[in-house]
Length: 194
Image (cartoon, rainbow, N blue to C red; front, top):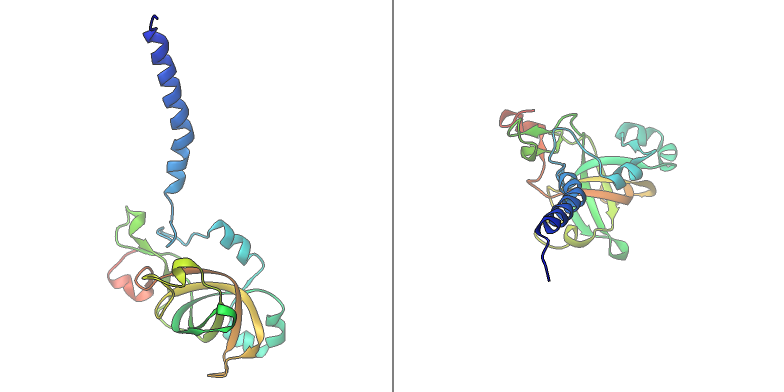
């Protein structure tokens, strides 16, 4: 049996090139904003883009003035969890302080996207209750949805209001979660930069 070293080298080089051609794009594709949005600007997930299509940004004044109109379509909002209790059918009932998403995220280092954090307004501009079916680690565990978590919720405003304070109740069809300390508010601008 005679070994043809030249052919083996060509075959080995071909296999390596093929693997790099297949795996390389995956490695590049894996680096991105990640689950908590580490990027200078807010980045939607693919399913988030689909979920928010046709949804209106929550406006507490207009919801109060035109409740029937706002119940007809989807609504999207960002909110910081003020309270979490058990809701019907295993859902979580979340009291949210509604926040505005900032146009740019704050970053510790302008040259390192991993230092950027999703950034929302300092102050609430209304209260909403949300019924959300939480999944996996968002439901139980060290990073579960709890007080001071940030959520983006997409859903419909129901007919009912919260018996606690009369605020609207949103029935979530989709959500995205940032545990406390995985996002920042505009107040962090004194310590971070854009």
